[in-house]
Length: 212
Image 1 (cartoon, rainbow, N blue to C red):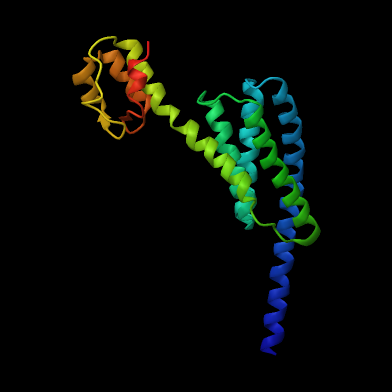
Image 2 (image 1 turned 180 degrees about the vertical axis):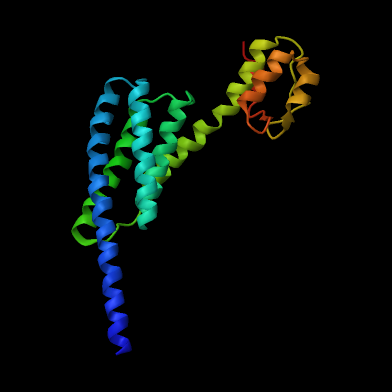
């Protein structure tokens, strides 16, 4: 009698799980169709902000929905693409043919993974090669956030540069430290504070300060 009750409950849970999976797939395939259209448009204009924002929202939705339902590999790939579109929204990266090819590879993986789930309820293994390619792009261009900050300093203050003996590539400086070096105005301090939420600037490459 107890076994019958347990089996009944298990069957009920499976029906609920299948219901949510079907709802997820229905929404996910709609998003994929929209993403495909947007990516094709993006190929004609890498700087179309409206399309970039759309793709960011699509990948964010896929990441969240896949994560909730337990499809972690789709969520991971979607997260990488979401972060890449976020960099583009912040003007920290310029898209080119190679980057677009990597984006399409990630998109194709998600499309094929959804089709496999639709056929068998099984999520395929994460394509580590594509995931690594996206990670390398993200790691490379995420660092540019700090280089942009140093270029801002270069524009607002043209004297009293820091030399390599004083600051190395691993040195962290607060805005107060920079004020001592560059004699920042109040406006310049406010500008830098709005650039980094933690009010700490990392000098990634001191050569940026020495560029003309």
